[in-house]
Length: 443
Image (tube, rainbow, N blue to C red; front, side, top):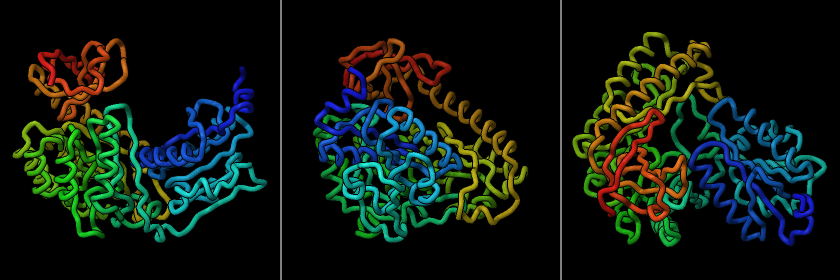
């Protein structure tokens, strides 16, 4: 039976989703999937024939338009008659641009994203693209969401929006002001994930450290309550600003049974001069002090660092200053981003633009440093034992998982290990970044 015939004879309409961007977007796409399931839709892969395609976009880089167009064309190629809806951060920032893309039927801004079933009507293709879009400052509701990358680890949304005004960032324009629910609501979502068999929960949001700003609660309050939940084996924070990562949170991690010795802490630049231009809320002294305190309490902790290259004002001297600072950090890896111009950001008015080839060269240099830092970090633990949570897929006859301190370990495939916490002895590091391991005992 052909895809078209199968579509016509099905009693249920079909929908496929594509997510562009961050873990928060993936969590929100999962929430949209639940809505469609409740609306009696069958969920299909984006590579498959579907009646409706929903594209959840990102606005972080200048590739947003290209990625959106490419994804729309892919849906059209699979089913030229499909209803195509586009939402997400890019849809909030550039609704008219998206509406002009051939094949797009519906554009939904940040306030309207979770009203798609009502706003799309009967999902019949309109004569003209429909836009539902309001000022992002009116976004005051918090929409709960969580997603999973496999059967072992789930990403739980605990915060949305951002009150920071960093020079390079469009997220406050796309998601509005910082907001979060009360702890009780988050706990209920966490219990549901635990009941579904997830052993690890990653707390995600735009600015997770800002949790509880309206309610008077704090991220530490949330961590302490989640730590006590029966059945939760592991917990991580997806990313946290250095000025919001308090010593109390680090102390809690050192004593916790679930919060893992792994922090991802944005830096963006190792130059105080550039940090001021970026309108960041810390300096390099604070950043270094945070890392040193983490290692004083959690000597085996892995720390990831976000860095941006080529921001306006990043002279050769400033880049060398930043490079030297980053090399001196006791960090496990870097996430390196190349600066790209984004509409309505203050970075555009700074002048002193860095040529794109120079940006790319600097990115390459920092990624090489990241590879060395990851190699050095992993190598410190070879021959030692760590606990791994194994995932549910096989690759090259191996099953993989993450140690508590974020080392990618693998052993010969055994499906009885899936979603199990296993004590392993780390062996040899492979060029691909994984570490072979052996199993002395089960946890």
